[in-house]
Image (cartoon, rainbow, N blue to C red; front, top):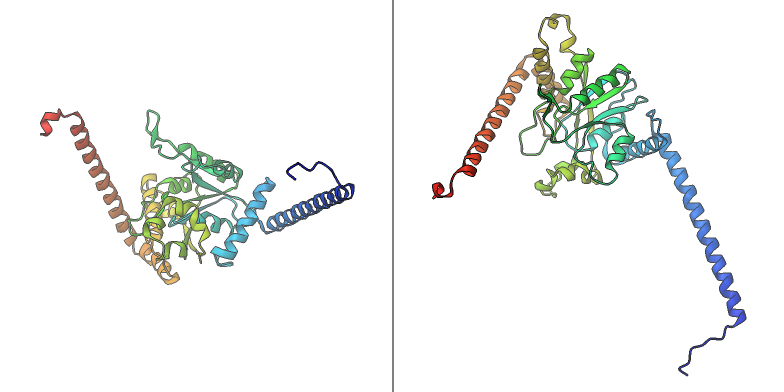
Length: 337
């Protein structure tokens, strides 16, 4: 009664072999079907891509991005950039990683070369993905290098200039950092202005609005202002992003401004970009058009000069606080009693 059964019924053994073979055949059929479905899906995604990437993986991923953007995040047909050769495009206000996806989905043929920070390169797969799309890396947390105080990312601007000379398309976020809700908008850095001046081309100005993922009051503001939410998780929230081609900045190309110094030209370009991007809240089409009137009336220079003064005062305050902290660090303990 308590022994182990060792006898095998030949009939049952035959049935077992038949069932095992059937299961293996079914598994092979399912795997083949899955492979065919994946191949068909990849071909469909590749057909939606409009950019001339050499790498097929890049074309397939770009196609999936177009599908995702059109289904869940942005309006189709509001802006179409059919000729992106030798174009310098500025995007703002910089709110989420979706900014670049939306603009890329509007461009035809010439692949956009984005400036991208190296802050997230430590995350698995990010560095490889950025390399696949040939982004222009901007080194994080580096300010100066060399005896002359040259920018640590001067090489990024040189790479971008070379791309423009080869009739490529360069896309830049002039503010660099995300524009956070309830906080002062980031200032405009000089990179876009320097590129436009060096290559003697206008800047195509694009503004994006309609980020439901940042306006959803059910999500705590601390999460909506989180860098990781904006860079990754906001992609899982539906949006209704509107792309507005505001026009172009060609102040530095006009004959009447030829005698101005490069410094004055860069300052004016930054002031005009800041005028379009200083409003971090959602703007209507009418409000965006009103910005052109501000620029025509020269009011934009007042906004920019005030922003520069605020930033300079903030840096001075931080410097004074650091000096106080340094003094506390070297003071004998008994002097603090």
